[in-house]
Length: 497
Image (cartoon, rainbow, N blue to C red; front, side, top):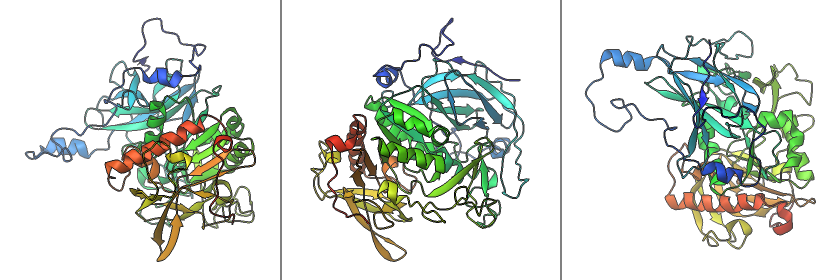
């Protein structure tokens, strides 16, 4: 049994085709002119811990219900194009489930628009089942399809969140809706490989296992399970602020995941720039080749985070499984192309610094960025001055130009941090290639999340978020124009290494 809903804004007789999908310039601005809503956000249930109020003891029956696993779900594709179908697999605790699909963006600052919802909150489910039946310690959930969605032009391309609500607690299931014919200036890539790598739902991720140890960690993780936490932590922390700002600026975007980039690396030629959020750590070989192709053909590359392209990753199971063994048990141990290891290691090393100009140097830091020269183009019109500090934006992971070989770069901001008792310089860097493409790296995974003050280690001063948003807006607007090297040739102050 499946449930089919109606687009929330549709009327009787609305088109079910994709022929009238809006691709003309300015479509993002027109989309964001629709009325937004804050209803997409999770709300703490009144009377429960976390709403900031003092309450009488909660009845035992209520406590028992809230201790059951919340409604959870996953889509059987990380992305889907107009004309395609995607299934939502659900599990819950026996209560009726309402599903609402929100497109995230600016929308008058409210952050999302309701596009679709179930017509009745009566979705079938099964109890949650975890499978750990293979030596890779992979956890997956064989739940049936509860909702089938046919994607039409009523679902504009973008980054979506399905809100799953059983009346007690809501969780999210993320989905990207693509336009495979898009030639928008900017291609925004959602790092679902990294989100899945850190996903600990069911007890195991690529970092630790059900017993909490690294030894029992998964070597292969599956998209056939929900994300842990609220279901969308990685997106909301590391990417949402960037998407929201770009749409506020009215910039036309094309939306894809890194799996889409893996499957079709040639798509980079259709766009002027590629942007990544704050945490794009896991890259396949096809992804890396595609981004290097972009640079070689005049396409700009921007990483608004740190530690990008660190782990060489292998896709399995029709793209539903992410393999990163990191040890001698890798079945492709002797294959220098298929083996999973750090990009800077192996028989054929390709340090990420050769692409980004910097590479991962360490974690566990917290510091401030200093603006080195306010006359540099990313700071023009922002009100920032030379030597001004952007407080608290550096952390927790950082990149350094001294961590590996690379081209000469222009240091735009700087900080000196201590990692394992060693002082290391980090900072936002920029260089331009022979084909005039620009490559910019924020070098801190505190950058993208700072735009909306959504970093998961604490709040930033409001002036820091405003400064980061202003600089990011300058960069995004320049990325939409064309090769950065034409209007903004780099002025290297760090020699090639």
